[in-house]
Length: 215
Image (cartoon, rainbow, N blue to C red):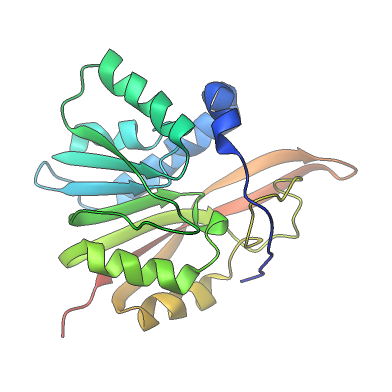
């Protein structure tokens, strides 16, 4: 895992136009499809979407589960998701604020935790996995997507980016150390972006799934 230390990014300012990026919308669709392939979703599951943003992933999984709670550290993003919840009269989608860098932590108990492109914005990956472990019911699962290791070109402006992607093998080890087992990974999608001075680049996005081990 290549690490950086940067200032916080103001996602509140980006919330209003967040969904206008077609690549971002397509990514959420691809990650949702990968999660549906890899995890046995059912109407008996209470799900946490960690780093939900405006709910692009949240709302794609909502029809398949009992409840889904979108957690984010941006009130602006959560406000946009709340608007969608109200406009669509959804009765099984909830929002919760949590500061991913400084706390407070997430509340509740869940059967599944999903996350897309949020891990690289969290400085303490081992600490996050330990928190996820405590939030899960026995035999609960995590299923999250993020970038393979890259050189910093993906974002361009790396404000608020603490990891330039992740090495899958190292991330699996961190999951095992946090108490997870049955760790597996697949490639969820490959994002193509124009990078200044380099033309179009391909950035693989992995999906990693793990189960809370019980001793």
